Image (cartoon, rainbow, N blue to C red):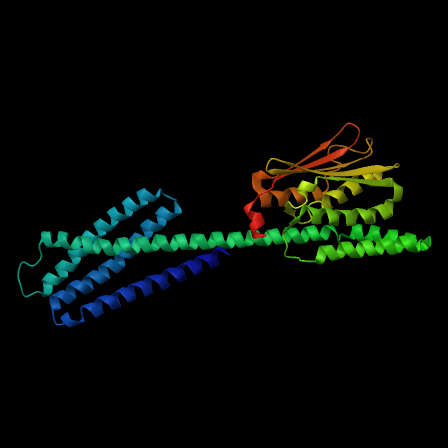
Length: 356
């Protein structure tokens, strides 16, 4: 991979180097075509082009070293200007010496003439340096753009992973097994209800796959569909309480934010209880932030601070970090009575919502 990148770098350098100097040479030849019979002037132009072309490799080494070391911009500007001046002095000296060798006039080569031609030569090298840094900055911006695109791809991948929470083998297995049990016990009404609930949940999962954000009301609806399936499975062992503030229903939240956490609560909490357990979902709006909490009962003899830390929590924490950065938090705690608490805090207004 590194060898391939090196080859691409060399090819791009030579393409730009050869193309740029050929274009500049064509411009010089075109503008000086009426003066082709002045041998001394042609000797000056050709010597200047050759010397400036060779000196551009020296400037490349200097600019490349400054770029690689991420030297401060003003220092790089000063150093490149100074180096261009020194090389331009050399280029002007060589060009005027070549002109004096073919000139019919004697004493044509003088140091004042060298100094007067130095700024023009320096301008060419400074322009070459500016072009080098401009191309490097363009490549850097393209790299950042590609990284941003890759980050967006990772975000989409995270969404697909969230979708798979609802299609995980253990969830489908448990659901289908519960349906099978209802069929065996000839509870056709319960089996039909559970199939309908599963169908609604899968439909919600597959609708609008490119939607990154939904209103909290939509997220609560999907969560209720999921818990309805689990209520059929656990019957009286699962009790659900929703205390959702009506003022929070239209607040946008990441899609599939709640369902993995609720699945975590059922899997690591309710399923280990021999008595009815409660899952409690609450929402509140405080200033410009949204607070969500999910509480579930669990067996104190079974629960430990890490028992309830399933994949759903870890996935949700990573997604929130990608979306909100430090503005979003997910905190967990295990109370003495075995109640496991997940508290989510996110900003209500975010530029990301506008792009969703």
